[in-house]
Image (cartoon, helix red, strand yellow):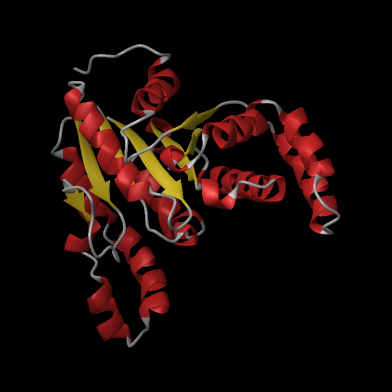
Length: 254
């Protein structure tokens, strides 16, 4: 079994993307399970096979520790690691090709808590990758785009797993906007030129330095457009996962 962690900022469409990708896999005859790791989720657009809320309840954490929603989210995120044996035991009983793992809505609750590293190690980091969702509303300007890429780089550095970049909610973009955002990611010189052409915002100087750091790290390459609402881009996500895990082949599992 291979793990794909869907990660992104709040509102980037992680849960809806997980549901859409799971549906696409089913229609394509590929077995998968969905794991919900968001203890604070009120409603989900899919039926999880394994749900952290069975062992960690945000409401119960709030009552037990006399915390508000924000503090309870932090404690609940850490309690996930305390229940890791229950999670791994549940997964060990399932034979499937992919585990689609939906992470908490607030990015920092997963990417920057030690509990996430414990969870990834327990589920086998070597058989895992990150599907990082970029919200187009946050990266339409050169500065915003660079800020989003810096955040994704920090997530990859923190979690230590291969990453695919997905521009979510592609249906909300015009063709011109889509082409521009893809061009920024695939042709870094275009992004740098547009950054220099941006108005005289002091952030542009910082943006130039961040751009050089991203260039040195090697972030730029290929970004996939996807829309959960239209079911678009699912084949590209699958192909990317296949390439990362199996060299592009559809491997059979014993």
